[in-house]
Each structure stands twice: as structure tokens, then as C-alpha cells.
Image (cartoon, rainbow, N blue to C red; front, side):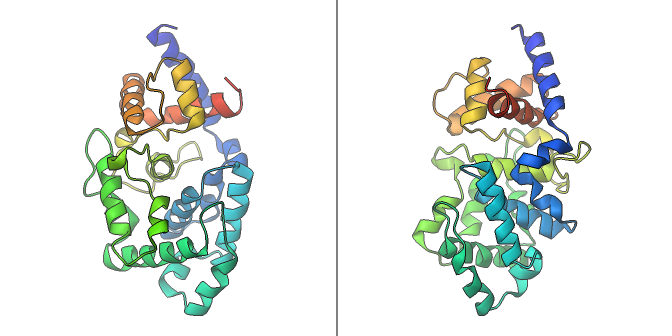
Length: 254
């Protein structure tokens, strides 16, 4: 495919998949249950944190988690008691367990009480070309409290070579416009042009088949390579192509 033909193909697929029916099978449906900014971003962050493995299992466990918060995540984060934390002992998603969840709750409380919220922590170090340095700084702030060593693995760090798929997905949810009913557009200090595509097995395999990506590993270097390719098609909103790559891989077995 020539470059223009490939752009037209990806534009068509992105438009086809970015609509409200996408919510039926995707974990982004969880924050769509909320209307308050803080509830959306907290439920989105925690859902994205456990977003690996079977998508049905992700949605089921994220739904259980919100129920443990009485479907009021922001209020729970700020006002939970020791008894409330005790009730979380039943929660587990793959390797993310109640010890990890308990620390995440404490860290989020610290971020909202002492750092003016998630958006404010992820914004100051953002660069025009991407948010990878912001993600690295965010992880440092998130784990500034005493924490179990095992819990740190649940927030990726681009500085150590990670593609940081889940947090890039969360950023897409928060930053891209809500006009098509999928993403939220509630974070205004970051531009869609700064976002990176959530790189996973599906998007990576499709990107390689379309010759958008040569590197074999799905790591930080591959993410930069994919960023460069997608920005050629749309420098203003390159991550809309996440819908195309993901849809082609998951739904069309491309």
C-alpha cells in the first residue's frame, strides 16, 4: 500500500471502530458509569491498571472493584476507613492483589490531597513529542510513600524500556475528545498530539504487517517508532489509529 492509501485505510478503520458500540466489549465502559471528573479518572486509572489478560475478566473484576468502593471511587479514596480496606482483601486480578490495591488507594489519596490530582501530576513534565518522561515522573510520585516492593511493577516506567501500554491507554481515555462517545476529553492540559498509541500484542502485530513498525519487541523504542509512523498520518490526533490497529487485530484477526 502506498502511504496515502494506507492513511485512507486506517482513517476508515479508526472511524469504524470509534463509536459507542466499542464500549460493549472494552474496559473503558467502566469509567463511563460515572459523571464526576475525579470518579472518571480514578475508575479509569484503576481499570487501566488491571487491563491485561482476557477483556471479559478485566471488565468483571473492574466492576467488582467499583462495587467495593460503593460505586463512589473518589469518596472512597479520600474517606476510607481501616474497615473499608479490610473489605478489599477478597480482591485479586491475576498478579494484582489486595496488598497492591491497598497501596494504590493510599497513593491516590496522597495524590489528590497533596498533589492536586492525577492530571496535575501527569502534566508538568509533558513534552511536545510525547508523555514518556511525564509517565516516569508520575511513577516516582506515585510510589513516594512506603510501599511493598512487589507493587511497583504495576505502574510501568518508560525510562526502563517499557512501552507503558496501560498508562498510555489511560491517557488516551482522559485526553482525546469525547465527540464519538468513547474517550472522555476531560483533561485539558495535555494535547491529543502528545499521546502515544497503547502498544500491545494486537496493535504491534498489525503495525508490523502494515510496515508501520519494524522493531520486534513491544518496548519503549518500538513505541517511539510507531509514534513517528502514526504522526505522519495525523500529527494532531495520531492515537485515533489505536482504534484501527486494535480493531484490525482483535475483531478482524488481520
